Length: 496
Image (cartoon, rainbow, N blue to C red; front, side, top):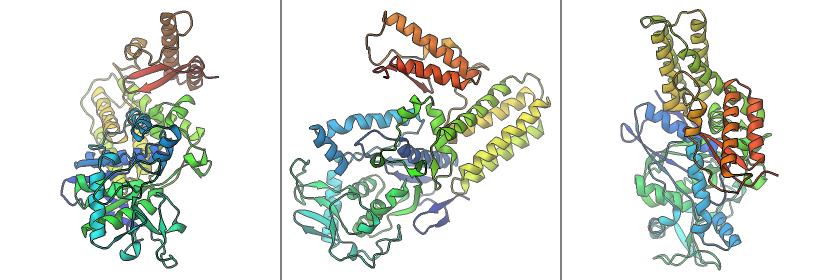
């Protein structure tokens, strides 16, 4: 039985989708006012594990992730740059999709953009006005939370001391600032304006997800995800406006991911303590290693980002990769052994049982590494044959491909780590020509030689040397990217 911790109620609940066999999943996507940081990616990787797990359990998953391209932050950024919203948000949107693929996150079925769904927002706001849940003031339209008696049940905030009639125009605020929230904002100089049936202006942040989710799912759906900082006010306000307008329960299961922290403090752009995926890669780590770290802790627990944690993630990933390499070296012929088949069966069952229990990835990984340890004991004792080894290898590859997504088998090719020829054939031409030393041909030859040296160092587990080579290339203006298709590189301004 699958159970999830439902923030709405604060307890574990058996999971049953409204439509048997199909899960409607909505996840809060990026606000594209800046490049995503790895704290953002923690939430997106958690949602990917959830989606992969449901698919592995046999469900069809219809996944919608919004792109917030109009809100206070994007408008401020566009004004500061002196450009339009679309021009300002485009590079951040592209970066999100590029890094999504680098972290091997399955694409959503739909990526609705807020600016493309103004009519749906206007229709929802008009319904709230007609039903008396919203009111006009100074050209804006606000949701009156006093008219929605169950307001606060998701975040369990105390409204007793709330001052009646207080309004707020800011998209985001603290719990101490509980107030009526803006559904539609009056025109302001320098801000984008839409001419609509409810008057000119632009949407507030909270109305966007309600309108977009209802377009694809209708008034009610199964799972809504986000970070814990979305619980209030964003998700609380989504519930209020959606249920007030439609008269039915908005979402059945709310799953929220805890923060990624740095030295015990939440990673956030406002704190200046954030790292992008590129920053982490420039420290010598690869996207699969970053993903493995983000996967490794239960989604409802804080995860502390440190170099030590990254090294542990690297070690865990290498342990699985080495296991696959060692299994390829088993040459003894024979029929499948019942003992090995039972080991694989129990490991698979324990792994999935842990995930059934609110995605308990810590227990799932413990079961997986216990399986690897037991299999290695059998191999060391000479009790595995080729059929056994293939079965063990298939299990690990299946778990990775279907659930973990960290690419443990991507370095396995013909029983060995890819050769320099495999690496070179996968490298594209550089993105930027900075006119490098001597000649382009000489520069490319140097880069390829360094990449080959780095791959050899990694194969020998000399990660210190591999990191040094990455840094040497970075200082020459060359960034390496380890992808599922091989090593890619591009030129940037040389690091000073």
